[in-house]
Image (tube, rainbow, N blue to C red; front, side, top):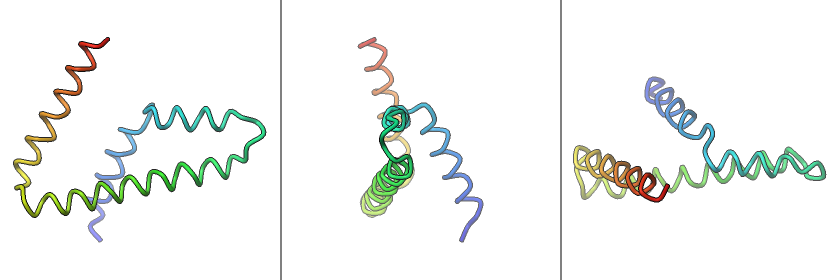
Amino acid sequence: MDYKILLTVFATVFIAELGDKTQLATMLFAADKEVSKLTIFVGASLALIATSAIGVLAGSFISDYISEKNLHYIAGAGFILIGAWTLIKA
């Protein structure tokens, strides 16, 4: 296992998820005093695992057809477009 890649992916996803709407939704579920916090934790964890698995599978599939360099350009352009759209809608 490449621990440098593991740490890089962990740090990137961890920072990206802080304050994310997913985390806020999880906090709202946890605020309900009648709901098991363990159930909320397990549900949120399984959801993040499932979405990460989809990302890994999609990335593996797409990389067979598009070069890594072009994927970086596409992802960068996508983030810029989403950011611009968010600013316009604000």
